[in-house]
Length: 601
Image (tube, rainbow, N blue to C red; front, side, top):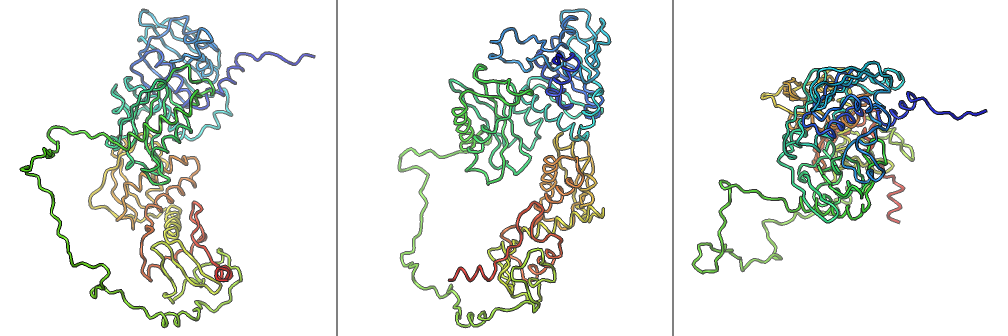
């Protein structure tokens, strides 16, 4: 009995849609790329319910004839590939001819299109790969795609879509990747009737600023290098603008966004000597290479690209970025130019060399009575510490467990002289069975984290009103996560007022945060939530609390008084988890008496 058979087109298209159309952002990407390939210079994107209800792309491109409009929805129908050799000289974005067929297989699609030379246009309606209506209409030149009720016929796929905040953030990501490559194209993005982006045609640097925010403008350094096999252009952020999270990092090749971890390492290598470990730089790097030297067809979304000479490209990228940040260009205008004297070699020049007075009688080895070092009575010090002081009389286990330490432990005692600060970072306390070493900054992070989490749990924020409110601006991408964190921010103690256009007034800050840069603290928290997403409420709350705790905690070089040290330890060991920070870093380490004795054998 024969069991092999061909799949119906409707099922085959749904399988293809699973590769190409993973979420609403995939639809936006495919349709906007098609609009750009159609030579549109004005594109409008209208989104409702993060793409669940509607994704509408309107462009002023070449449009399509009646026949082309119908053919465009067939599988593997394309205007960009004629022979197999064309695959190796690609300069367009979409070329497989699967996008429209895949979208029509899982949504209700309406297309209105007209070629610029045609008098009448075409309207086509398709649902689940089935053509429902096609007729001639009056419409503007270009194309208007309306994709409604995505995954209406695949409930399981629709069920597994993320929250609206997450799905719209993915749409923003795809939008930004395209808008950053085509600054000469004007884009408008609306979500639920609100304008998110209105990007006019501009130069590349202005487009970067319009998307990433004005605060990045002063830190952009140009990158430009031309070789026989590759041209590099774009911008990198100055080392001072690097940060631990939330950096803008983009690679583009021949007008296409790509992910390339190997080239990312080249950029990080260039920045290695200029930024602290763990920080990430901003970069917007555009590669222009021979299309025959790359393969863009190794991944359905075409974001992973294979290069022929990756090692050579690595070296060129690293050197060009390093040159940009090591020798930043200095721009002087006429009014701000510095008048520098020129040496002519004549003795009557007005410029005089500085005079230095030397003390001929100075002897660095001669004892200075006014700065004598105090003498230490070592015998007395030895006698005072000869017998180890016991903090508590209760017996201790031979191998004390960190989890058995609490606020009644041998560390926290009225005898404060046993707490020894070390280099402004550690607190050392003697135990009956050895020594305990506490990282005071990590301890403070644990204390603050527990405090902020308790405030959010009890919904009782303690806020300190600001005499002069501050204004903070967010990018559209950052603003997408604000609705899911505003309540928690209020419970922590942030009093924010929405001023519109992604800007907020900071009217109050958490008590105890007055001397901390609260704008930077807010930014760090939003960046952290962007990483974790908004799906799990507990994770969002923890991300906020941890980001703020790290910002507000004492620095590593803070010298604590005896009272401060004892208070810190008392609060630490009242925590349910005093041994590790929320992100798993060690707070308390015990050096047993046995380990100490081994070192002196």
